[in-house]
Image 1 (cartoon, rainbow, N blue to C red):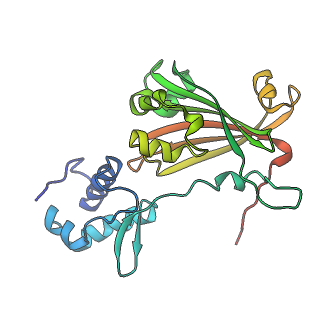
Image 2: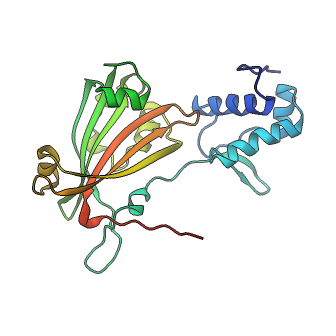
Image 3: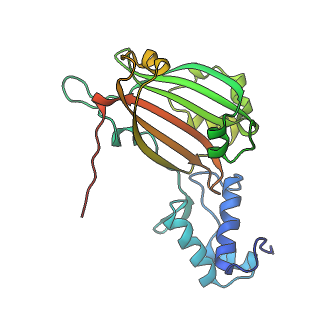
Length: 243
């Protein structure tokens, strides 16, 4: 039997929802793994099945859990691999989709600039890890990215050669640091590129670029990563299905 912590002014289903989300963020269950049944959770926390079901429903609606007919309720693993294709069109001359290659330029510990500390919910000048990388098509840079991570959570990355670990960072975060990105918020803007990113993207200074800011969080909502991806405006696309 377990008791729920948290603000006792909140409804019990909300406290259970928050408790389960925290357990998931702490790897009590791994992505793709089933959580206990509603009956088991009811017995464990001495709550009605209706209260448990309402908490599970909330986590399902948030995309943290998913129900599989006849099998149970599982930790959902988000798919981020195709997110860039919502904003950029990367294609061959024949019109086939291409996935840009990844080239790590640097990985270093630094003091967090104020905007980074604010985004990640860290104290001013907290230690963070900055990753610089470019994404390329046919050896031509199409995206330049700066990626910021809390040092306390991602220090093991400093011992790795990330250039030898594959093009996707989130599986590395999970395998090496036990940090799972569960969801992300993205903001789209445009700017004139400065000399640093003009050099990385091989475009003239003040050329227009599209900027995607992404704040990635774990299952409990704690910020894990803040990144800025700057891309050639010529590759930019935006589409939305309005019903």
